[in-house]
Image (tube, rainbow, N blue to C red; front, top):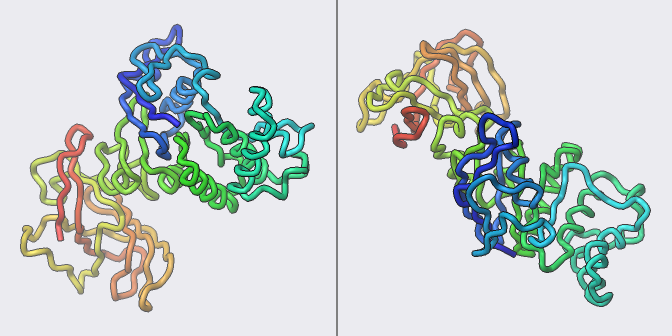
Length: 356
């Protein structure tokens, strides 16, 4: 396996007016499961093609361990890749598909058999070895594609290019959990490229959020969600994303905007106001809004909880949590007390403020 390092890496397509990737710096330790998360056009595919050797950086360097591989072919890098749709040879059995990468390198038959048994056991596909791809479900085909990428024991890096896109929603969780378990067992360096935040946050040890060819933040899933370094990260990560209001609306004067997650607000009715923490002014972190939409998602201790959308004097906000004691209806006026918020100036994080 390998430590992967990007050093001021950039790429511009021939004839383009601006770079697709610009001054990327990132270090992915050996054996880490890393996710590259971004919307369409963020530069994920271009970066993936540079990692695999299909494209050469226009500037900067790509290193595997301490070796600059920027100009090296993909074959020499020992990179394996799993695509959105499984790439299998329909005329070969599952066992022959899996063995193909080692047979083309003329590996000893004993070594191939040992590796085949090991990978099939890890992926729980031993019973499928004699079948042809036509007899497999899409879920099973993608498992075989993953196994094929893992067959070579000398693989430096496994690239996963949105591997769950074509898989049925009800089986995505199973495949993601299998990928994560196998990655942890084999300690292989994996880079998972996706636009789906759920896949990124539940698969990776760390996540890098890309937009417009740059990395805005790299951190654990918890860090990226709870402490976004940029407004875009707060908006893009989360369902719904972070709420943003003028900082002054929350009684904060030293920043332009303030953001808070839907679950960082406690609700109360006009008849049951929420007292603020003695450590803060009475106005800090308090809002009043009119209920626009109600989505009940369950009950706790006999009280409903879910997601409310409210209209405030400063824009709409989403609040998730336990509903007030009194029944809530569309048009009701509710008080909100934020437990914490993050402030931003020029879209960059300024501070993390505990309000209650």
